[in-house]
Each structure stands twice: as C-alpha cells, then as structure tokens.
Image (cartoon, rainbow, N blue to C red; front, side, top):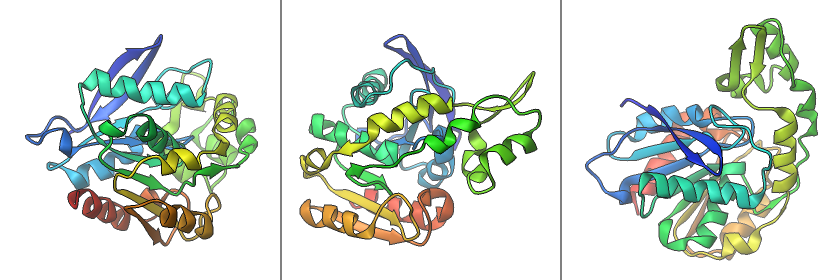
Length: 260
C-alpha cells in the first residue's frame, strides 16, 4: 500500500490529502478520514495500511492543518463545504466517513446535509454537544530553536500526538498549524449539534476512550440510544484512540465497515 499525496483547489485554498488509490472496488469501498484539531492526514496512515487493499482510504488535511492552506475563517459551513469539494474533486458518489474529534462533527453534519452520499459514519471520541476550551495552546505559536525545544513547549503529554505536525524551518522548529487559528476553529465548533446527529439513520459506530477528557460515557450512551442503527464501543485509552489503541481501533473500524 502506497499513500499518494495529492492536492486540489477550493475557494481560493489549496487542500492536500493522502489517497491509498483507487482499488477494484467501487465507491462502496471508499472511506474518507478526517482528523481532529492539531493533527493531520498522516495520522491515519496505519489505518489505511490495515484496510488495504480492500478499502480505499482518503485522508484529508483539513483547512489550517498539515499541508493544506491556512484560512481566514473556520466556520462550520467552511468545513462542510471543504468536504463537499473532496467528493466533487474525486468524483465520489458516496463514501463512509470516519472523523476524529473535530472531524467527527464534520462527518455527521455533512451526513445530515448529504445523506445520500454517506452510507455510514464512524465517530472517534466526540459527542454531539461540544464545549471544550483549547486556548491553552496559544503559547505554542512561534519557532523553537530545536525539536526538543518544541517538544518542551507543547509538553510531553501532547508531543507524541503532534509529531506529524512538527515542521523544521531554516529558523528552527514550529507547528504546521497556527494555534490562534485553531482556537478560533474550536470556538466555532462549540455548540449543540444533536439534531444533526439524529438527522440520519445510516449505520454509525461511536468509539469512546475510557479515559477521555473530552467525552462522557453518559452523553455517548444517550447518543447511541436515541439514534437507530448506532453502536457504541468503548476502548481503553484517551481522546486519540487510533494512536492509544491502534490495533483494537483498526480492527473495530474494519469489522464495522465490512459489515455494511
């Protein structure tokens, strides 16, 4: 399996994505993976390898992340429009959506607006009501003289999850994203989206981390109980389960999508 990096233009921005490539299967075997804030498409490379060659995985660097352009705005409508552009660019009629955190809300909101394009979706540790404040990342802005200095700036807890976003420049080490923009994006993400989550009836898998600081078991249990054809799975780990429990996460995704 060889992930190819590709780009496309949309609303004056350049979007980068990783694509495991068209397989003999049709759109019914396409999965679009959407990362969370602070991360990027490369975080799903192990999942793409695990699902190959039976599933085509397209992992998007969302606006302001990875190799995609920084943007002036990070509204809910912006993210949905970006995902619409992915479908248009790839001429996809439908695809399973997998979203981690920010990407999860983007996934089920897109499904609510385009149910015919989403045969199923998977949410990684995100609820339908978002209230988190991430302004603590603002001091991460700027350039550090060394990689070790950047690790010290973001802290040992976060550094392993952000490694894909580390960038070496002529002046030192920095992050691919601009913290001020990501805080604005998170502020726009905060809200109650339960009606969007309940708007569709396609199969859905909710995966929660048992030690998550972002979601509560009670809220995700309520989400699963109120929506038909929705399964809740809890794995040992925190908010980024595809890194905390890669084998179990990948297996759960594979089992779910192969059952469709």
